[in-house]
Image (cartoon, rainbow, N blue to C red):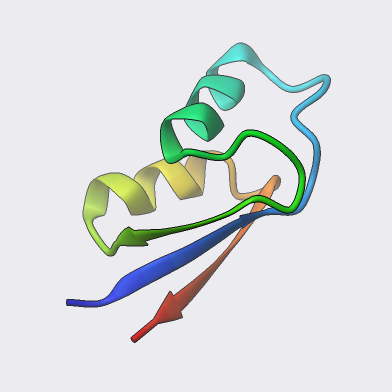
Amino acid sequence: MARLKITQIKSYIGSKQNHRDTLRSLGLKRLNDVVVKEDRPEIRGMAHTVRHLVTVEEVD
């Protein structure tokens, strides 16, 4: 199964509470944090919500 590498590239300071909660749910706590998650629709949706704060790469 494919995996996604999600990296936080921008700070959440000044963003909406919903975006902060989404970053926390993804496991991102601070700038330049990286998590690898399974490629599922739920994870893609969360990454899409905070797409201006993160980068997403597919990892095999």
